[in-house]
Amino acid sequence: LVHVQAYPPHTKVQRMGFIEVVLAFPWLILAPLNFVKVLINKPSPMAHHFVAKRSEECQKNCEIARMWATMFWSLQFVLALGLLLVQRPRWMFSAAKVCVGLILMANFHVGVVKLPIALAGGFELLSAVILMMLPAQSKDKTE
Image (cartoon, rainbow, N blue to C red):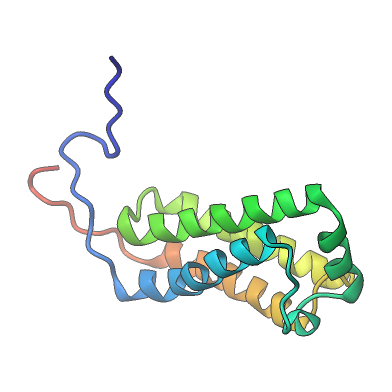
């Protein structure tokens, strides 16, 4: 029998900081909503504000695009939850935010997504910088 431990020995789950809540909140709301939307294959009435029409049609008609979309939304939710509950290793959350931010901005550049999504990409890049600038949490004597 293998015992899997969620946290390293003698590590306590840290309290959520205000900044972590602000950075995780959009994904904790958007990810589950978009995950369900993709699963039921129903376009959002607001989609035309965020993605090009051809992108919307592509996802509607392509199973592999929906698979990647559900993977993206589920991973974003898990990362946001991890940022709130574990907060370590912080570099991992920053790296994920840099990847997402750059991909969103690159896709704006080629016309796949619209300006609000590019701005979200900028928010992700700024979030990565903020996370790396935050001081490390003080260690508990039991760690």
